[in-house]
Image (tube, rainbow, N blue to C red; front, side):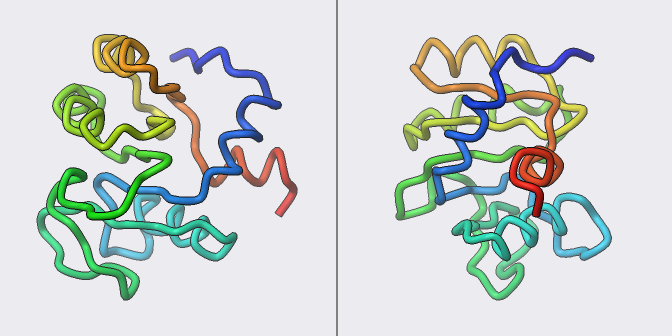
Length: 138
């Protein structure tokens, strides 16, 4: 699977955005969908969990969908299988984020095209934790 064509400088600029909604955030500390957003929170990011099966994750109110989040969102970070991404992106577009980030192993050309058409940058098949460590060395 390929990754998007964004340069390291473009990815670094994305990390200047601080409000991140995490779709599919996990209650289980051993899962990437938990320890990646935990790492981001520890590195200064405002994490908002989105998981319809939880009320609270990491001491934060958990929303059932991204459109329920009252605050503005810069990045929608997606931890769901590729075949479930299209409806997530359709909903996320309503929040007008600057970036939709599909975690490592996630790629959906139709959803990505829809987001780009709405003026949203799309990162796919990259891990926010791994890229942050690679680019900022923390």
